[in-house]
Length: 93
Length: 198
Image (spheres, each protein chain N blue to C red):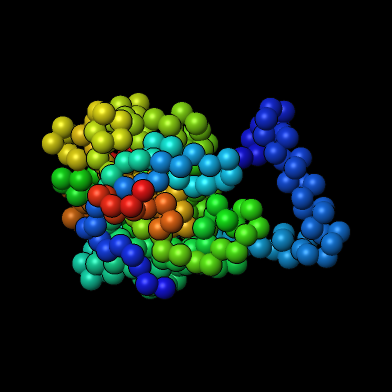
């Protein structure tokens, strides 16, 4: 399936706080990071866990600066995020 | 995961046994097959596999490149795999350099390349490690007795999806005369997670 994002793209992680299962860690919600790579296509856990159709979709390794996540720190954190939880940095919701 | 049979883990163990019984009763699993799979898994998987990968990467630049580009494709060169389950998990190997040091965590649960390296350490599964290493990795490494120079950048990899991560440590200095087996023996489980230099 075609990927929406490419390595180097700046993306913003969803701010959603759903009542159901999700694999977006709280500490990256709403944060902007850089796509490192497309790591594969997998069913969205949010849907799969609720018994909904969950066709594989792209998952990206996204790199964040600690200062952007926590307001402090000089390190970086990479997190693997499903495409459904990412928008371009400046566009989308 | 089975160390404490009286605390909270006891209830998890009980639920696992109940689940096993339920699956067996429905004919969905064969207990003998399960035992065989677990025995084979435990026999094959260990940090020594990570040591062998590191040693080969240190000695063979071509292998190192292949391991970093596509670890799943490179593992069979050493007769290794991420298999053992319904499907192979994707392995990502991240390389420590003079400028960058890598540390692995799973903040959401405790994902770890167990099919290759065996079980993860208890501390890796602790809420303390999982919460703190993404926020203050340098301080956490200090608590492991590992001091990184201030000029070294740290990248923490959170295994939040289907990939499993392993660190390729730096080859220690003064090891020019060691053969591949001796080099592999230098590598520790903590080094493959990134809380030790090797």
